[in-house]
Every structure is written in structure tokens, then in C-alpha cells.
Length: 71
Length: 404
Image (cartoon, rainbow over all chains, first blue to last red; front, side, top):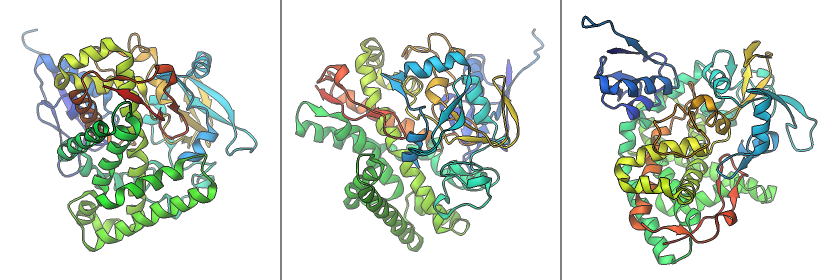
């Protein structure tokens, strides 16, 4: 499992993340910056979320591995 | 702005859909190379850095602290790194650094969010359908640049800016004139006076009576925070960014699909489902924007193992970065089946294209509508005879004769 963190302060409001993974990212109506709708996305979206982090022009998305009890 | 750049740098060199062989050979020397260029035609040459590798380009574009967009020491920028901004550069976000850049950009971004751009989708679809009607009336073969790519980017831009339908033709023609190298200096100056006068009047009109469009909304939400020169500069930037790039992508994209029937077949197997990845791969493969605003190092910085000294300039090659093997396997291939690569066709860092979502929506709409109307679209001349357009801020085609 992964946990996603975003930093609206450095976000350039490009909308890339929302385009790539609309189930996880949104854009604020007010200034277009990133909003996180699902900080712990389902496993099948992990690869997409990682792509979004790589594609983010501002480096405003971080993906962290989560320690799980099951592992 | 664009017309000077093409004389200064050779980064616009292309061959077919990709960068030219000589720029590729330069890349073999390193990810960052020094080149001698003349700042103006006939002037003595000066050294300038060219970033050709993906990591180098991302480093430079991603570091707005050590690389400045506005402190240029040559050409048409703020000379000597002065803080004083000439009036004609007001509002041109690409020539701004922090914190001014963020101040302006934050006010603009709400107008360009993915959600807001969806509102322009129905009108973009109508525009595409009207163009297709006109193509059918004109008969085969038809020039896809003149009758489809160019009118779509033009009409969408005019919708965004709020240029009334009756004024559009003249506004767009005059804009084109001012960019054409083979036109006389006098004609180009007159055309420029016309378009800037037109935009000035438009801004004044919107100040008095703001409508529902982009400029009207900006004035309603932030009118007191913009002066007219800034608004004018923002309009100018939209014109500069919203026409040739989009026209180039539509026309070259259609040619790329026609020239890769296997990829076209994947697209047409389920157009609605596949169009987004087709658009994304075309953006990377074609990389029509040659280079972003040159960056100037504000302190000594090491890039790709080379020392760039404070005050030196770097031009970043978007097409070279987007075909760097570091990006993924087989990057010279146009492959719509691949997982989307982290390309930088819309730039990288704080100056990432503010109109990226708008551009994607236009391309998506244009490719879908075209093949919906003409499923058997084909070239009307041999591909080798299609004239490529290299004398502009974006790569594209002069003409694209098609039949259906």
C-alpha cells in the first residue's frame, strides 16, 4: 500500500495529476491547485499515482510506502 | 518575440517527425553542449548552452531559484538582469520570476483547470463540425491546415478571449502576418499595430462591461489586481501560445497517424477510449514547441557535469528531451500502446503550460471529430511532398492535402 501526500504550496496547478488519476487527485475551484481525494489509493492505481508524481511539473506529489500489519 | 528566436538558435532543427540528425549528433557529445550563436542576424556570435538530455532539461526547468526566466542578459529580455520590466513585457508570464510569477499565475489558473476547460468542450466540438462541413463543401483534396487545424485553434482562442465572430478572420490573419518572415517589415509592423490595438480595445471594453468569458471573469474576480498592460500581456501570451502550437499538433498529429497505419488502427478500434493516450503519445513524439524561454543561471551551477557560470544562458530542447532513452524503451517509436511516459511536452517546473488541459481538449476533439466524419481519411499527395513548417515558434505543417 502507498500513501500519497501533496503540497499545494508548491503546486503549479498544471492539472496533470487530475488528468492522469481523477480518482485520486482533484483541482481546487479557487486557484487550481491540487486536492487529494484519496490519500491511500487502491492497489490497482498505484502505478498511475507514481506516474502522476513523476509527471508533476512542480514536484508537489510524494508517494510513500506504507507499513502494513499483514506484511 | 518568436521571430527573433529562430535566428538566434538552431534548436528548431527537425527531420520528419523528430529532431534533425545534426542535433542528435550534438547530443552524442553530451547532455549539455556549448554552441556559438548570433544574437541577431549578422551580429557577432556568443556562446550559449544547449540542454539536450532529459535529466539536464528537467534540472534546468525545474529549478526556478537558480535559473531565471526574466534576468536575461542578451537579446530581447530585461537587459543586464535589470529588475525594470519594459512595458511591452508586462503580463508575459514566461518572462517572470518568483514571486511576481506566482502572483499573476495564481489569478489565472482557475480559468484553466481541467474542470473549467470542460465548459469549452461543446463549443470546440461545434467549431470542429463547422470546419468539417466547410471541408466537405470545398471538396477533395482539401488542405487540412487551412480548413481544419488552423481554424480550430483560431476559433477556440477567440472564444477564450471573447473576440466576436465578425472580427475573428481579420484578427487571426493579421496575427499570422506579423509572424511571417517573408513579409515586409512595414507590413508586419502594421499587422502588429492592428492586433495589439484590437486587444487593447477588447480589454477596455471588458473593463467597462465584463462578460462571461476568460478576460471578463479575470476582471470580475481580480480586476483591481491587474493593470491594463498586464491584461494585455496575458492576452498576447494566450495568442502566442494558443495558435501555432495547437495548429501544429493537429496537422502533424494527423500526418503521424496516417503514416503509422498500425497506430491509427489502435486508435480507431475504440476512439473514445484510446484518444487520451493517442494525444499524450503524439505530444511526446512530436514535441512541437521547440524550446521554452531561455533560462539564465543566477549563480554558478553544475548541469550534466559541466559548470554553467552565473549570467550564462541555457536553451532547453523539448524534442530532444522527449526522445531521450532515459525516458523509456524505444523512444523514437510512435507507440500509442505504451504506458504514458513522463514527457515534458508542456514544459516542467513552475512555468508548465497553463493551457495544457485546454490544449489536450482541443486535440482530443479535433482527432475524434475528423475520423468520425472521414473514417477513410488519406493523404492526397506523397508524404515526402508535405511541406513542413519550421519558421514559427512551433513545429507544424504548411499544408496537408487530404482526401476521404
